[in-house]
Length: 226
Image (cartoon, rainbow, N blue to C red):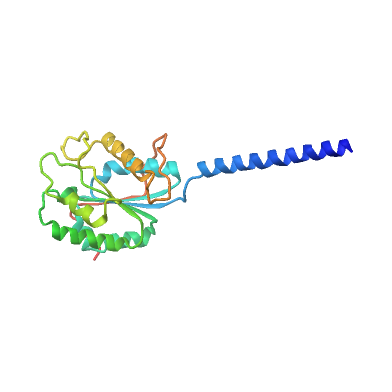
């Protein structure tokens, strides 16, 4: 009788221990399992020359696919009045879009018109989640309000303002260095990962560099698809 009682107690202890271990393992899996892999479309102007390299690091480190499309010298008008954006969306089927645009429009002052261009771009995005990286400060031209115009349309939760971030520049004095752009992408990733972020995927900081690939470039003379 005593042996049966002892055996029963040992069996109960074993079952309880097994359940605790399973719960602990499940908790670990919950904490470490990343969100769903994303198909990211990184698109915009020449600022992507520097940004894309670090975004590729993040994509590889987190299991995401990244397609980069750079249209040198492009403005919101280029992307809003052609079918270029819609074509790339139809080809890539992105689940997330990162737009970097506005630097070439800092010296303009027709921001009501440019707000309409931004609205058309957002309309083309449809229901695809996105963020918009605003223009960096220009050493020779004062921003008359392009960044603010973009933010008014896309909303504060989707707009990353980098106009007040100090960055080392290349010899042209306009484009940040690759190191500065890498620092900027780290800040953007922290912003994406913020506690109240509406995005469910992870952008953990990479521990190594990746090879930039899957990118397309267009010259400033390119007219875009009609």
